[in-house]
Image (cartoon, rainbow, N blue to C red; front, top):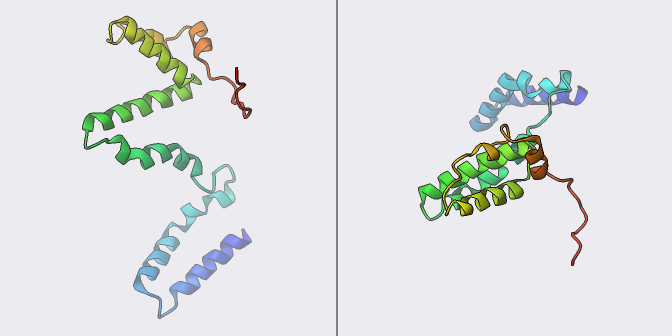
Length: 148
């Protein structure tokens, strides 16, 4: 609390400086206007100080957006967006995306390269408990897989 108050006072003092460059003054004015929202975590510790978790979740799509667009191919970008949606749904459902995708592609192969006529077995909210268990994410292991 003390450090936050000292920061606020320093910002106020800097705004009063007559030689302050206009862009800096504009930033400090915005900081003062948004101060209550920027410091809400001080009185509400359940609110995170930053949004790093959200930023990490968006990192791959944001960093890769130009690569996923391919060589100007719109279908490639749409495919990437669809796959991100599917994989996030699987993650929220605690299903292993590699197992799920392998299973889905094998079903497509059995249909002569076409999607299976019934998608219910691939929808996490429609899967039987046994199927969910078979596709469940396993424990994350730091150990390297054994050769053999």
